[in-house]
Amino acid sequence: MNSRMCARGCVVEDVFDTTGRPPSGWMHAIFHGGPYGEDVGRCIPGPPAPEILAVPLPEGGVHVYRLWKVGSWSDPDDPIAVYNPDGPPVPPPLLTGQEKTWLREKRRRQGIGPIGVVALEHGRSEDDPDPATIEAMLAGLRSRKHLLLQRLTDCFEGDEYIQVLLREDEAYEVEYHIDASEHCQARTDSQAKVREVLLGWAADWEGWQTALQWTDIGHPAQAPAGDVPERAATSILDRPDTP
View 1 (cartoon, rainbow, N blue to C red):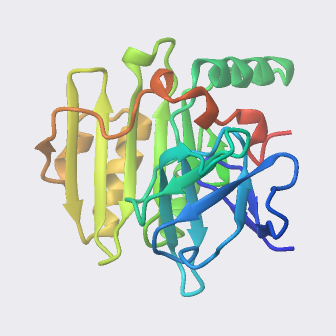
View 2: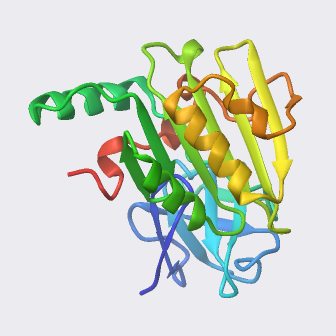
């Protein structure tokens, strides 16, 4: 049985129902287009249905499905999730308040000082990454994937983060968010400029923005962690590198 990772960290196995009733802990799903478009009888974890499913493609990259609605043909006890054909690349979710608490408690038990910055990729997180780690994560970024650096704060309104998307055309799309007052975006073909910005932001150097030309986009594309639906939230305990 093959397994696939969903965008929020849950495993989507190749489970199909041929009996008219999915196995316990699974539900039927219909996919419009994409790699699952012809899979009649495919089942997904649930209910509730995951809001986002990211399916790795054989040629590389991912195809992202977004939950459109949940209904039923005739049996209310047999809900069916319907997914849209595609979606934009999905950045890792911001750490929730509970996740921040767990991280602080973990560091306290280990006798390590407070965390300032966390680097997040799908399936990987690094506490207080040094410049070499940030450079390696950026260099290893694949098409349609994000690298997110989040500065830990005590309130969601004060969340500060910077995220990088490697687009399909090999250009970099960079966004940063400071409180509720500043949210800007830039695009560049230069990995060196992106590296300079990331390292400057992580070290909180004055003038770190000057390497790129920024556009004020006014509102965060990344939903604050407090607004992430409960069924879509990922515990830091589920992240692969967390004991």
